[in-house]
Image 1: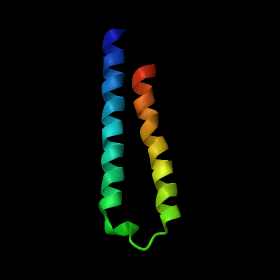
Image 2: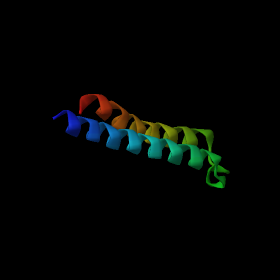
Image 3: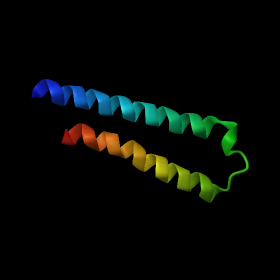
Length: 61
C-alpha cells in the first residue's frame, strides 16, 4: 500500500511541477502583452488553483 501512495505522490508532484513551469512560461511569453492587469490576474488565479490541486493531492493520496 505504501508503494502505491509513493507512486501517487510522485505523479502529483510531477503534475505540479509541470503546471508551475507552464505558468512561468506563460508569464514570460509575449502572449500576455496587451492584456489588462485584471486579465492576467484572472488567468493566474485560474492556473494557480489548478496548481494547488495536485499539491493538495500529494497529502491526501
